[in-house]
Each structure stands twice: as structure tokens, then as C-alpha cells.
Image 1 (tube, rainbow, N blue to C red):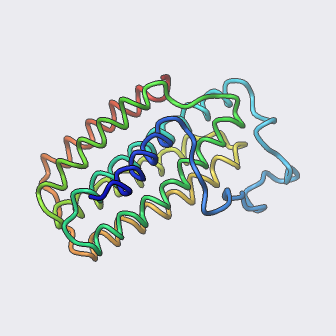
Image 2: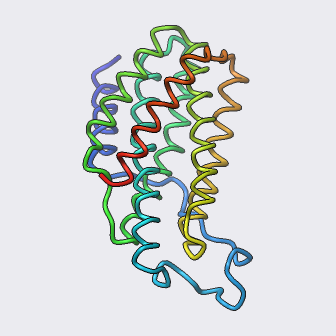
Length: 217
């Protein structure tokens, strides 16, 4: 890796941890059809304090997930042997950076903040991504696919748990879910292998610890 590439990756990591993220796509907007009858202009100001706090907790979890995604893709790109795979991880990371910016904006709109443990989440995900990369490109792609499938299921649960009136957060989560599903399909089509059940179970267990902690911290 060249010095310029190292500087670029360091800058990306610093922005991920500090919350300075860039968007290549605008914030997803809620569909008018999603508004309650007679309430097409409803937004987060109509939420109760408890609903706002709950929505903020869920979006903080999603923001942590995107911090981790930046670290994972960054590490896997560094470890990848194939130039084409490096480019694929870079493209996915750019889409995930949109998610990072969107969730950060939703947290701000809900008068909340990102996780105070973001540096820890980032460092842990970076180490995991580097470890996955050491097993070769096909395993790294399989890890990417399994990660995205688990994130997709996690986002499905958030769509069920978000307050009905928080259409803005729902629009963000729906677009994130569509992107994660596309990443998982692309990883398997590129040659990813299915991970063993014990590895998938360990990933789910680690995810539960992260999500339960990030909801509050």
C-alpha cells in the first residue's frame, strides 16, 4: 500500500469515528403513501418524548453498524489480493458512507448523539475485517455476505420497532436494507463461500452485544 493510500484510509477511519461523513446520495425521503391518513406532513416533531428516545436509540444502533461497516470494508480492501475485489469493497464502502451520514443526520434531528463507544466499535471491526481477509478472497466475500444478511434481518426488526410516526427514519432504514441486500448478493455472485454455522452464530452473538450496548451508549 502506498503512502497516499495509507493517508486516504486513515482519513476515512478518522471521519467514521468522529462523525464527519460525506453523502454521494441525498437523504431518502418518506413516501407520501407512508403518511397516516390526513397527516401527510407528519414528522419527528409529532413524536412523543418516549418515541423520540426510542427512535434515537435504534438509529444510534444503525449508526454504529455503519461505523463498523466502514472499518470492515476498509480492512477487507487492504487484505484483498484481487484488484477487482479491492474495487468492489471500495464501492460498497462508499454506499455505506451514505448510510453513515444519513443515520447521523437522523440522530441530530432526533436531538440525540452517536455512540460514545464508536472508537471501540471501529477498532474491533477493523481487526475482524483484517482477520477475515487473511483467509483469502472467497472467505472475505463470504464474511461480507453473511454480515450484510445479518444486518438486513436487523433492519427488518427496526422497521417493526420504529414509531409509526417516524417516517423519516423508516425511509432511511428501508433504503439501507435494500443496499445491504444488494451487497450480500454481489458478494456471493463474486465467489463468496458460505461460512460455517459456528462462525455465523458467533457473529450473531457479537452483534447482539453491540446492538444492546449501542442503544443506550
